[in-house]
Length: 102
Image 1 (cartoon, rainbow, N blue to C red):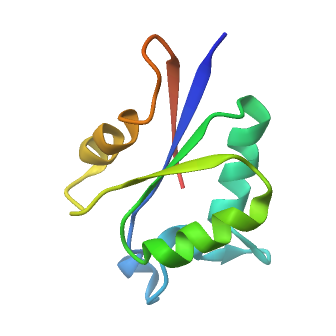
Image 2: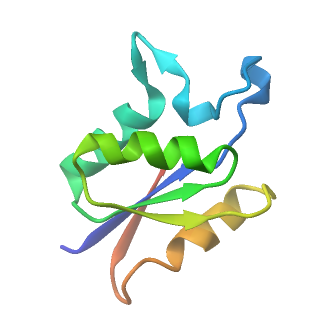
């Protein structure tokens, strides 16, 4: 089965009282992004990371995971549906899609 995982990682995390992207917040010493990317990688090697807020830092960290991760930009944070729409542009026709919050 051909599965493509879209990880939504464009959020600001303003409710976390931090100036870091939400996906870069650490839990037990590991970023939420790392946890979700390795989970995604265990399901399928096809991963697209939707980035927005602090995208350079998010992309930089994702490159340290030794996974093949493509990125899609969400220029304006207008919601989850829009983030999925941005990510779906990287998915091959006919692939099944799994969407995970990063």
